[in-house]
Image (cartoon, rainbow, N blue to C red; front, side, top):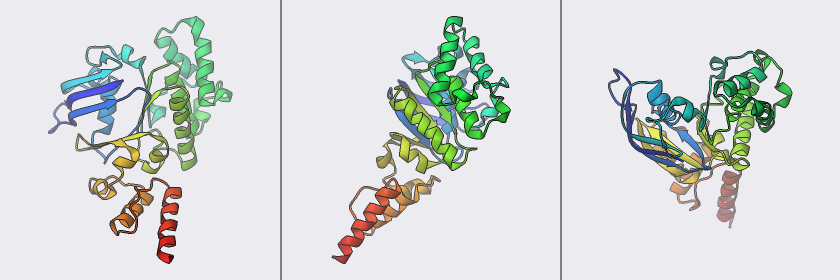
Length: 283
């Protein structure tokens, strides 16, 4: 679905590449989380997927990026946008309309979707995100979580195969953040949409994504299942990735020889591990 082959990119006048020799495959139907320290190159990676590089951000490129069999560099932004829907953390700066319906309509008309399909697409996009009641509301009157849902509705109204999100919960409270990720899981599991999300809230990612990719200093540091990537939290913490506390705790318990179980990814797993350790100690 998405394939990077020896991809490197350097912004104009930058002293070093933002991305270096990236080789990464994201399969169709994946739910991938991208993590890494600030300035690692996470956002730049997303720009290469949705065509912002090289069509908007100029620089020196090497290698290849393929999206659904199409070379991003040989395609047009319009073609890529019909395959990749993009949602960014600061959605307010991207809104072009004042009313929810008009925001969704703008994208459909801009991409010349047949008029006979527009009503159905607006309705289905609002239904899929669960905000049909907001259709005629002013965007300025909405909460942060509702605005994120409007942005996702506008993106999926174009029926992309891939939904790309960069820090979608950065401005949201914990409850709204969880609502957004629950929505993303539904789009992934029920609709088969490939989801790629850059996010700092790793504990939240662990609950929802299937795989993680860690980027550090412009390179792929690690990629794989969530448990495999987080199996050595001390190494991730050294490069500036704050692992979930339950993962760090379980890793230390294993290092102390108290358990040989895989690292815990959530509170339930951590609680069960500690209970088993205490039970064995009492015996």
